[in-house]
Length: 457
Image (cartoon, rainbow, N blue to C red; front, side, top):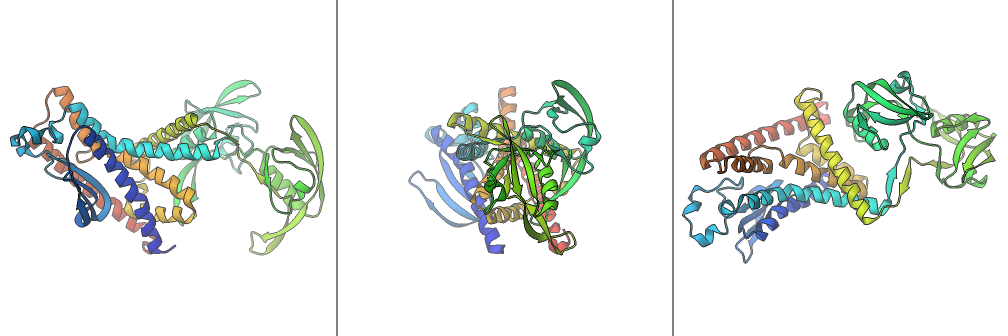
């Protein structure tokens, strides 16, 4: 993957998201009659631009790491109020941001993050409408080697109903908690043969590779939920020739019980050339199907080629449920708010030292990830854009002066005090916030640089 591709993908992600964010501010401000002096994509020196008939300067600037809308009455792009604005004629003051009612100013500021949130909702809803909602029942099909869940007493067939007091409706609920908590002892609620019980489990820590040379530290229970249900067939499939159909559930092979696709693999791979009798469930009935196992060559653990048995079936993890427009939007909101909740959890863990600050990413890591997802296809790339969009919403809502959340904090104080903070206090708060943000930007950028392979990262 070339540098130009990475840069292109980075700009293709960040540019539209910045425009959408700032359009939220601009359109709501315009709805309330506020004049915009400038709409900028990027910071610093202007590279290109034009002025529309309303007097708004639309421009593209040299540093493509954000953007801003500078409303009439703002002293600078950080939206510090111009102290001299009160001396302007009444007609001009009517178009200035700072003279609008408190609730209008709050809505104008909140509109930016809200637009990013709604974009994320729309992407998730569109995917759900197009492909359906994948539901994976939290019923244990198998255990990994040295599984902490199995050591704690969980069994194949147990349905996990809760973890750390949080209800588990499907596997996504379980994974969200486990991935974010790579260590610690938690109570796991299970249902076994109609009985409810709670077992304490010590979550294991595991490092995963993202396929691009980066690793992440996550939690792991050592359980598998891949039920042995046939999702499809490979070309020249022995199983399909033997009479298998999509949706068949494999329950036995050669008289041995099967609960997961791992069992299928373990029983089939050593039997190349043999005929095995499969027991499958289809529409409530059990069928016996003999299958002539074919031989396939693959690299072994020692690097040498080895022959293994294959029957040519594709696994299915969960089921796809068709979803209508209203339900899809609901799922879009639910997933977006789950991501926001995960971000709050991750930030809290970093603040309290439960996670390393090295996990914070800046523009270089975002650029790398943009290029990586771009190389995987448009679906991965659009899903990544949704992730970055909701990150922008979350970051901008932090109560830091200079960000949207900082302005909302000012308005909350104004609502409580029944009068705004004086201009000097706001100006110094914004200056402090900007300095903090610049320091944070330098820190995460250095963090990105030292993680590059050239520096041993």
